[in-house]
Amino acid sequence: MEMETIRELQAYGYAFASVFFALILYGYVYHLYTSKKKGGTDYEKYSNMALNDGLDDTPIEKIEPLQEEKQMRSNK
Amino acid sequence: MQSSNMINYDYSVAKLFTIATIVFGIVGMTIGVLIAFQMAYPELNNLAGEYGTFGRLRPLHTDTVIFGFILSGVWATWYYIGQRVLKVSMAESPFLMILGKLHFWLYILGVVAVVVTLFMGITTSKEYAEFEWPIDIAIVIVWVIWGMSIFGLIGIRREKTLYISVWYYIATFLGVAMLYLFNNMEVPTYLVTGLGDWWHSVSMYAGTNDAMVQWWYGHNAVAFVFTVPIIAMIYYFLPKESGQPIFSYKLSLLSFWGLMFVYLWAGGHHLLYSTVPDWVQTMGSIFSVVLILPSWGSAINMLLTMKGEWQQLKENPLIKFMVLASTFYMFSTLEGPIQAIKSVNALAHFTDWIPGHVHDGTLGWVGFMIIAALLHMAPRMYKREIYSKKLLELQFWLQTTGIVLYFSSMWIAGITQGMMWRATDQYGNLAYSFIDTVTVLHPYYTIRGVGGLFYLVGFFMFAYNFYKTMTASKVIGEEPQSTSPMAA
Image (tube, rainbow over all chains, first blue to last red; front, side):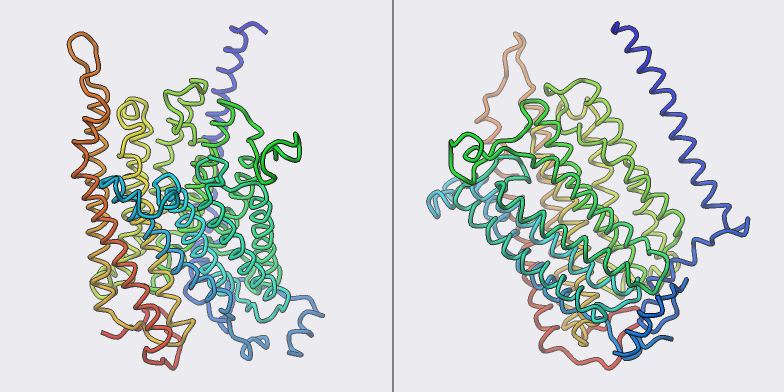
């Protein structure tokens, strides 16, 4: 391949990557800051995970253990 | 609630790593101070024959503080934070307990092997990757065990969403795994050719390629050992100690992905004006400058977490350590990109400004954060209050003065050195010989040694305070919710 062609392809690649990654970045920012309003995730509530981190504190979003695991834990 | 009221968090592995952090901190920093004074007073090289020379001790200093002090600190905090934010105790899984202890003891064996071989002068000669292939294999095993611990604990968690610190710990695990494997691809010479000692190896890459892989590794060791796990710590300990939620959880997520994306491309700045392709150098330079954004995103997020609560800075020495750590993080993540600009690098490259920069980050950011983290953990792990607030305050000011002496002397030394190397007379001949620079730099090397000594004395004060906290301090009945209790 000619050097000039390589340089041309590089330039297209560079321009595409710049636009593509900028879009992803701003898209992610937009998602984070509009999610709560749209009825999606309220990300700020996760901050409380560090503050209420006792074993008996209620989880922010509880994960249900499998039935047999539950059994095993209660047997201890 | 589940039966968790009968179970408590199990800190036995966290405690083991905590002790290791303090011991390796003392060893690594003592060697550091010694070699700093060797730079100022070369006769100190002759204290212990070949074993006491700068060349032998320098990798022992760097490897002990990076892979001994810092990694132990990372693991001590992981085995503490991991349980708490996932709301699951290690005591609930005998398998994870065994794995945790295996992790610790294999790691200690690995450290012994590293110390012995480096003292003997057995080295691959790759900076921060000096260990020969049998030790590399042992390190990979230790690392895999840690990974199993992380994902094992995540697997039995009660909290569905992973707290931001856990993301950072996972990134540390994955990042280092990838970097370490690729940079330590080596050919054992005896096994392949029958030549050399059985432990000896040469890199699988040659020349410029080796340099590129090495600095992709080297700089990202800074990323995934000095930065990523330390951010994991501050995102937990600062909110917890101050009782304030993170200023913006969203910003923490954005900064996380920003850091992950940008950091991996910045290593080329170590090879500016070398034989690597020009575009690699430019890319390294540009990504280093862009790196200011995610770094400052995290640091500002931490400082804003203290919004409305700045009186705590005066009252609580742990907050003081963490806020200054965050400030030093901002400082060194601004200084680094400045040094990575090509025209600045033309002056700064190979000068003492570089170790000056590294130590802003390691002493100010990493060291202070680990010290604060362990002290926050102590009352909760040992059920005793911190032994002495006064000693802690004294330690803070002594170490801060030490850091200032360190970086200010290295700024002056580095820029002086760079200017003298470049200076030419009217005919284009070099104006100075190398020894001229050595003579001029001598006072600054002495100041650097004194700064390091201040920091080391402060670290001994920390070790004493910690030991007394473990053994002789007043017992506390209930676990503190936020501010750590300490005796005046």
